Length: 363
Image (cartoon, rainbow, N blue to C red; front, side, top):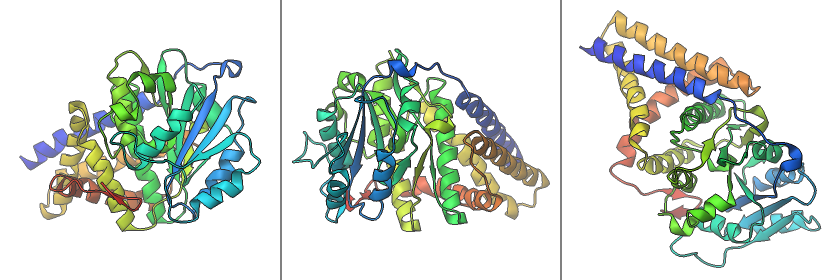
């Protein structure tokens, strides 16, 4: 009976993996540079004094048609030198501006409130968001905006993480694995998740859903906005696997930070659609079976475990190839162990208690 359950779970997992790989590889039409609309990049920063300077330098190097780009930096009531660093850096740079939220817009709080304040003053037709621990490439804005044909309301990009140790590498692989699943789903018109440090959307679509003030609060505001726009059932949301839209972020330094990040994502994921839960189910059952295999002395289970690991390896290796990144075996081994542990533990952490700590605040 155990082997039958394992076969079904791994078969479904393999089929899903193939479908996600195909979906993520789908091509989308692009517009010409002369047709690029005005764009606004928004960065909400809270207590990022040790990271934000790299982000500011990268933003300053972005190339976009003259007069069509503004960069809005939101100092989200930082208690460190973040605001001072921002003000010093942008002095004399016309396309930068900075604001400090004066209070809550409606019932908004945290990063969502900071973003909503910036969106009130943003002039761009296309809004791009990233985080203070990220470094976009020179052509990031142009590459993202090029996908905004008339029927597209949101474009999502991939994010990797810097660092060469297995601890950092497993985080990068986890990011890219989950984003490819999200990319494949979105490109089948079944969006499941996204990452707010590399996303863009039409301001008109944002206003059409009433802005963040009209969207029920979520600790994963990026996913909530995506699903609200998707519910309009009139626009495309695309998630291209494109190295030119790739963002580089800094990995989390400790397991404690990872715990709160995963819990935050897990709490946001509770609001997933039924197909989102279905995607998670086969992987969850397969990981339970993998964990049980050493105790059952079952050759069939061992073969299935090896097959599942190889499925993950070749799936991830292809993602890295497409994004012009190098996948290391030591990082993959660390990721595979990490992946099993957190996937199995996450429901036990999220379901009894939805409290989340993030950026010095409690939600």
